[in-house]
Length: 93
Image 1: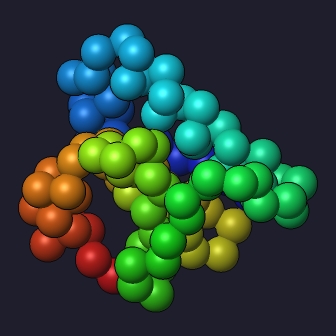
Image 2: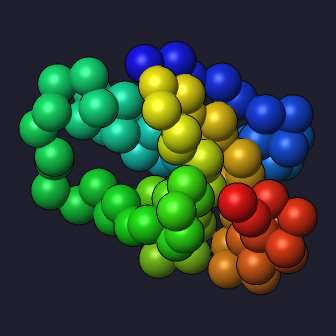
């Protein structure tokens, strides 16, 4: 499994304060552990949005969007509902 952060993911992560950034990193690490170990942890908040697009819930407002195709995971964006909605208009697959 390969994990690749897109520039949009890096930019969106950089804008966050350190507390939220740490929660995002925890959620992403849980996902990576899930994929590598096969055990789905409680509270992961993993949801399929389309054939290749998935979402991880960080907290009530923050989400991480990624594309999963074959052995490649491309981290797309960290943001709230409106950020995600705008991003998905261009990121759909």
